[in-house]
Length: 52
Image: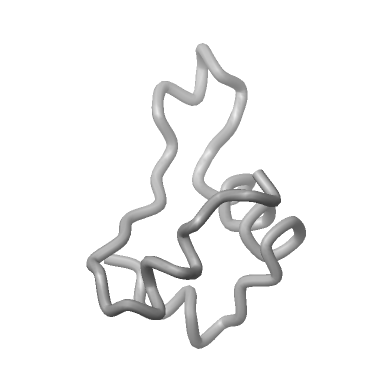
């Protein structure tokens, strides 16, 4: 997760989405995914506002 390039994509102006893919099977939901972005990548609230 720490090597994911989502922040670079946002900075380049790309349309980026964050979602849960089959949360029952993988055990993660949208809230947990946002938490991971903040915790492991240091995503800011301003960056999160630009997620499509």
